[in-house]
Structures are given as structure tokens and as C-alpha cells.
Image (cartoon, rainbow, N blue to C red; front, top):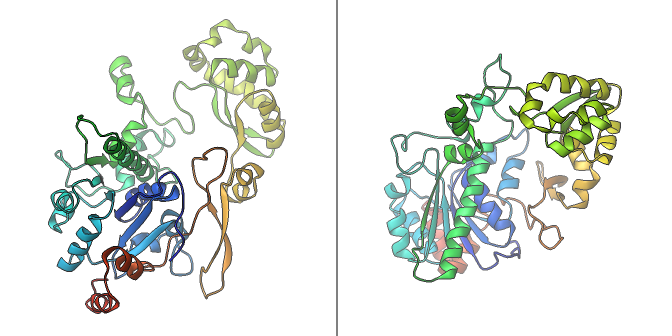
Length: 406
């Protein structure tokens, strides 16, 4: 068994009943900072994420990343014995996080009532597409659907084309963040004690997590009769900001704050725009977006991306090259902050290779947090965990394995 990680959540034990991304992302955040996370997987194949985005080998790097710092225990949750073992584990943990369709845990006899009967102090985070109640609660809901229902997809892409999806699972990761925060809030309430009501079950809907990222979407609709449309790479009203062409590529420039705007205009050789009193107001800048972008493009197209980023950064204007994976893994800032951490991984054929994985957010006290270990092989911790926590003997474990329970 891998050595335990240490951190501010050392001593907290979490039971993960989840697949794919949302719940596993939530538990990964807790595991990164010292919580012991016991990930329950199906004996016949485990989390389906193991097979995602995999061009060779048997276990994807996506799984290795999201399941890092966790223990993999196999249990058949559809069997009575597997359900009882979950309840036995729940009696010894602080948090359960799950992301099955509403009603699934209840159908398996491991719902909130059974979990709280096994452990009255337990806190439960439930992540689902549409939440545990409401007219759509029983609809199947993945992250991409949540992005559509939550309003994000409608505004993503070009105005003359169909909406596109972000090239990262934003719906799932946002829900995972809310799931982790929910668990921490309930643990904090428990630790504070007192007479105030202490919540024990958090209901996180994927679509609501996306909707929370859409800031004033509905308020703008009521106040200004504004239905936000697709605007390619820019946010409406956030001017000037976006991707601008250079002599050898493009850069992202964010010059939309009033002070930054003046510095940007001076940097691109347009002090007349920097000192224009009308352009101090963001709405006025929005009305002159084309003129402002034209001034910026006239300057950027005569320079390399490196020179543009250097000159604007020196002037106090936020700007960056548009990085791909190859740029990220070699960038000095990523490396200095421990955001790229290499591991030897047996991708295939039993020959370990160095693979660079993302680091941990946030830093504490100026120190990067080290990843303890990558997502484990299926069932790698079943016998150690069940033996240690439940006192199961080797004979009992062998019987469970023979019966297909583990």
C-alpha cells in the first residue's frame, strides 16, 4: 500500500462511491491534502474512466490523474454482501461522496438513512445531473448536458455556427469543486458544534454548478432584455479583451479594466485613446470595440508573440501566449511552482516511462504540495483496506473474491 499523504485534512476519511469525473474530482481535492480516500470500484472493470482517452496500455492517464492519492477497493454494490461492507466502512469514515442518479443508493440499500444509521456523524455529498429533487431529477445528466442546460453552451462558439463544448469537462469539475466545498462546510459545522442546525446531506447539481459560473446571465435578461449570444472568444461588455494576431501566432490580452486599458493603449502607441475621457467607462469601450481592436491589431501584427507578451507584461497589462501541452510542461513558471510533477508510469509492456502530471492547487505557506501517488491499479488496496478497517481475515477475503463480491 502506498504511504499516506499528509496535509491539513490528515485524519479525515472519505468513502467515494463514484464514477467518471464529478465525484472523483471532489474526492481528489480532499485526497491531495491528506484525507484518506477509499474509492469503491466495480470488480469487473472498475471506474469507466480507466478506459477514457487511452491510445495505448490498459489504464488512461486521465484516470491516473483524477484518482491520485486514493485507495482502490473493489466491491459489488448490487450484492447484499457488498452493500453491507459499504455500510461497515461508512461506520468508520467522515464523508461519503457519490454521483449516481438519484435513487440509486436507496435502491441498493445504502442511501442516507442507512448510512446515517451506520454512522450518525457522517456527512454525505450527492452529485447528480439535475439534483435530488425537482421535475427533472430522474433524467440522466452528464457534464456536457449540464453545460447546455446551465447556459454555458449557448454562449460558447461563433455566432454563425452551432454551439461548441469547451475542450475540458467544466461541468464536472465545477460540480466537483462544489462537492468538495460542501463536504468541508459540513465538516466545519460539525467541528464547531453548538446548537445551530448541522447539515448532513449536500445536494450538488451539475447544471447548477455551471449556472453559478454564468454570473449575471438572467439578471441581464430582466434588467436589459439582453439574451447573451455567442461572441467567439470574447465576453460581451469586456473590452478590449481576447486573442490578437501577432507576426508568428497569437496572444491573449486582457485590457478591460480602466487602469489597465490606459496602460495598454499607451503601450500600443495610442496615447490619444488612453487619455480619452469617454473610454474610462466600460460601456463606452464596448461601443467602440472595433476601433479599439483595430488599434491593438495594428501593433501586435508587427511583433512576435514573445515581444508582445514581454512588452505588455512590462507595462502592467495582462497578456500571455496561448499555450498547448508542450509549452506548459517546459515553462519555467509552471516548473518553479511545482505544477508539473513527473512520475514513472508503466503505460504498457511493463516498461516504466516518465510521464508529467499536473500538480496540486493551492499552495500553502509558499510550498508546493507533492502528489503522493497516481491513481492505483484496480483493486490494489482491497485486501489491505478491508483487512485493516473491517478486520476481515485472509480466508474471508478469499471467499469474497471467489463469490465476485470483491
